[in-house]
Image (cartoon, rainbow, N blue to C red; front, side, top):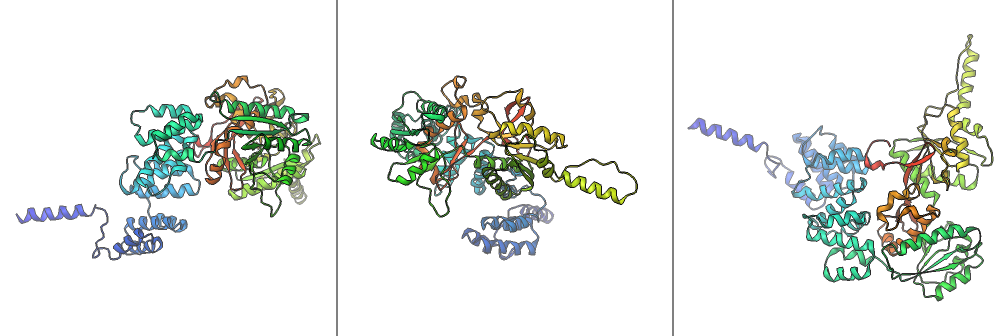
Length: 591
């Protein structure tokens, strides 16, 4: 009998060794105090206490809890140091912490690996953290619908935190087809159904249906969808409808009308006013717009007209310029929304793409001009802020037909020849040498129009840089694609709206056949977005991280009212631009 009792006692003690740490003051003095500090949000004290517990008892759980406390304190270096004490663990918290730190460092591949080690059915105290991190990764992978559904669940678990803006952002990026399909899923909850219906109606902008939804769901959090939007009835548009810009204005007009009637008859009204080829009619157009009773004004397009508007500065009607205001130090330009096909946005897109593809040491070639140098400085700053650097650069005369001198300098070929000659002067026997490009170039970024790029790319090949990848902006793309003429551009990657590269790629977002668009697709998309997005501008400015998919790019608004575009990517293949898959569709791998 004694033997049986002894065996039972041994089994009980063994089982206790596998249980979670308990606040047993006698076994782990200081544990209860560490837990209390954590619960009281005194994370620094908690972290130090857990570190001391780890030093005393060498239990990995204490290092893990110390790392968690430091992470809550936003002391990421200490958090990583504590995590490094644990070689591996099956604990969900271990992988959740690694996921969070990897996201902070933009290491999405590692973050995805760690989050997959956590069961998606996880319950208890770590469920909210899992939902939040998985939603972030879903957003990165462009699975916006799943991200929204996770955030809706998270909003139920943490009702004291408002997740409405994050949910709205993801649902706005979800296609109508996906929303419609999700609404008919059998497992959709009542809360999710309200959100999905609201998102679907926000896309259609059917005021009658929206009013009915709001009556049916008076207390639903998705009411935020409609409280944030301003539905303008009378929109005045100021464009140079005559003169040399009339064709561009015509394309913008057609895009605007397509957006206005996207879902059939519209209660909005567009009235167009001609500012003149050089802005000479701006005053007449402006006061005509005011007298027409406009409650929102789009334009003007020309900078000469914008300067006149700044002098008038007499209206309380919200205005979205179709260009940017020249930045003047000390001047506040936040009185207007500013929407432009900005080359500054494009060089930022290039810098982001290069870093995402692990191309950190860049050679830059740009035109010798004030605008060329300005964009080069912007690119270098964007690259530096993301951990890259411009290792060499040269500016070429845009009017020349031969850029060999600038290319050789940028590639370091001249230095290579000089080194070879110096070495030859030292040695008695003759050397067989060949000029070499500098070895620290990961990629080449060229700011160039099509004609210039067709000269630069073959010369890069001639000087043995054919294996160095080349990137550019949308400026490299001609309005009319000529495969035979563009064969010298093969291999170059560049950023541009997916709609411009392949209008059919965005067909599911539209109710008209993209094949019928014969105008300049770049300005058609520009005009379309100017009307499609105007009701959301103020909300997007308040919630700075929110982005809306437009035809001209993924759109966001900064605190100064400037709209920014995240663009798709394409590559010349057999002289024809072809859309590249999103990097996020295969994290951690080059496209």
